[in-house]
Image (cartoon, rainbow over all chains, first blue to last red; front, side, top):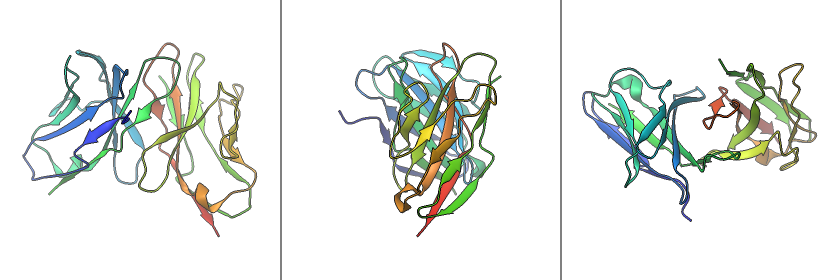
Length: 113
Length: 109
């Protein structure tokens, strides 16, 4: 079991470009969570998805950010028209939805230049 | 609304000294509390959960509902304990976790 896989590990984008971050949950996990870690700050919840459904997106910025978890394939966090302030580490976690905590991926470090 | 507060951004202790990382929470129901740890260049991993009442790597944490706290303690700090520690809360019936801002622990040799 490879655990939660995130790719790419590092992503550099110019201002105005799009960033697509992928997360493949652990085998058997159907719940995916995205978090953002800004420099010198803690983990901020962004969005919680189950297959084909967004359950809670209360932490997502209203514009430019979107997330999906299709029936087939990984979950995608998409950031359109990136700005310097989007530079951060983005972590994905997955769970089976039960009483136990999450399993985290290694994160994607996005740098906007 | 739920809130997790870790008042100390940075904490330094000498090797062998006791360590306590503070966590306070705000939640109207009965939450589930967790401590996660992130060692240098590693992914975030679960350290312990309050419902397990276990000791992991010498760390313990007791849920104090009266003080709404879930402080993490270890009697004798080791250099390998240096890491970022996050307190997290899951609300009743919820699946997603809310994290505090984290405390970076440095154990000085």
